[in-house]
Length: 246
Image (cartoon, rainbow, N blue to C red; front, side, top):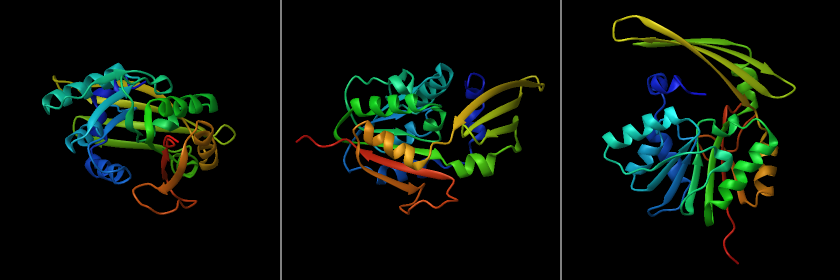
């Protein structure tokens, strides 16, 4: 997963304002300098702006290729950010964090209830008392109705993709076959393809899994707002806390 995608990911996601996304997440956290783990960090698109805001970051991802891009970006930005090659369900930090964040569909890639529970339990184990877990998911409405069985195409300078979706109502899973075309230095376009799978976890399922993992003060918003989600909300933002001692 994301093997060749790492080379073109940032160009194809250029329309997303990651600085504003980072500001939104920080507004959900307490003030002061925080120790934050960015899980499923990809190429560090959120890791770097969070670090630039003055926080101590650790990036975690299951893709070595994505982490290589993130590490080089951090080096060029002169930011001291350690990156760890780990699966999110088995994440392990050297020291407990004030916050664990997982943005842009990381939790949708957990395809089973077991994997979902394992990640929430691992996040709780790596958080300080009172620490927060922040994550977002693409909603069932988005996966079933917006992406559904549709095909999309995007053409950027030097790169393009064709994205074909197949959604299964019973399993609430979507298969995404993505074909990329990348311009080589000699002007030729090289074609490569990847397949991704996501699952639409319901709000009720996610809240239950968080509670079973020991989280409290579970809150859900329409992403990038402080409003209650609607049936047509495409992205949901979750916030959950580890109980304070005593």
